[in-house]
Image 1 (tube, rainbow, N blue to C red):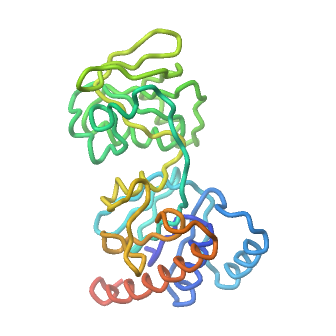
Image 2: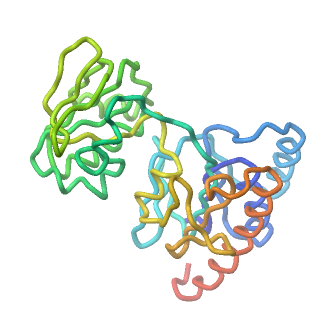
Length: 279
């Protein structure tokens, strides 16, 4: 078990790990890609990571779940942590489909664990083409077995673990033009003029991002930004957020400051619960 898992290797995440590592908290820094471009800052941070012996993993996080502790899930691993920092920046991923916004909450969802139970034994789709889409489809199997992966003309980009699991689902590679229905979603209209009747779709396009993690954990948000207090604590105890994902002034210096505060707060939080959990 880790004391802290930090998701995001930009300035906020790196600033936080400096605090948690120096405080002897067992820390994992995880992320697929660097979220900043200042080479000097990156080189300095990597040297500090080596000197502190921080564990660093090059993987995409596809889900964060709250159980007894926090489970941070990647394509190949699952990590247990007492506290989690979301420092994933802001993403601009958008699915350009006519009338998509018309059916949000009326057949279009962004969270399988939040809304999956509405679709018991119904026909649903997951829109996406990476591990994240397959993971969400697997989560939906608790509610229905009639699940199709809609890739929207993208080739599947899956790790070996999810390639095998994707074989249990129907795969539709057609480009999506529009959604159609009256009060609720009823059909997907494809670019070739064909359509498919559907009860609901879950968007898991590209990779999991800030809003996706917030939905899974029940975090209070403002649009796609996570709300935090002055200590970078979210409304869920043990979950902190820092950097661009909080929607604050988007500059590296601000991300560094927030990361430092989050790191300090996580040290205090983990130390406060260690005696209670005896681990």
